[in-house]
Image (cartoon, helix red, strand yellow):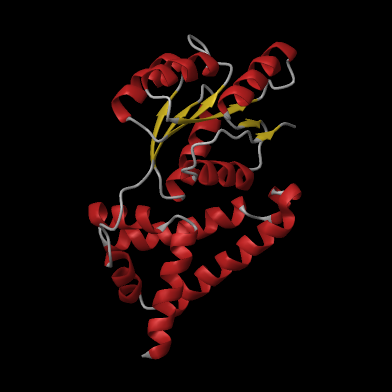
Length: 232
C-alpha cells in the first residue's frame, strides 16, 4: 500500500515535470481511459527522441538527466495497473487553466513539429501560417505567448509583433527564423530584442533548448525587460 502511494505521487510529479498531466486530463475528459493511456505511452516514445543527447549536443548533460527521468516515468507506467494511472489523471483534473501559445510559421513541417511539442508540454496551442492570419487568431485566441517566424508572406513576424504590442504590450513574443545570418534581418531583430526583450531562436533549433526558452519565458512574471538570444 505504501509503495503504491509512493508510485502514485512519483508518477504524478514526473508527469507534471514534463507538462503531460494537463493534456492527459483533457484527453481523458474527452476520449476516456484507453485514449489517455495510449497518449502517455506515445508521449514517452516521442519525448525520448526529443531529449536524446544525440539530438541536443549543446545540452548533453541536461538531456541525459531528462532521459533518466523519462525512463523513470516509463518504469512507473509499466509497474502500475492501468486503473491506478487513470486515478492519477482523474485527481485534481480542474486544478488550473492551461497557458495559451499561438504558433505562426509558414513551413508546415516545422509548424506541426512545434505544435506537437507544446501540446505535449501541456499548453493550449493554436497555429497560423502567416502574419495576417496569425494576427486574426491572436485577436480571437488571446494567447499568453506568440512564437512566430520572422520571414513570412503577407506580414513578417516583426510586423506581427508590432501589431500585437499595440493591442496588448504584455503578451510575450519569441522569434524563430532560418535567416538570422542576413544583416538587414539581424539588425531588425537586434533592435527588437534590445528594446522589448524578445528571445530569438535560429533554425535549425534544438527542441529542448526551444522548450526551455519558452517555458522559462512564459512563466517569468517579472516586469523588467530581458534579452535571451540563441544565434547559430
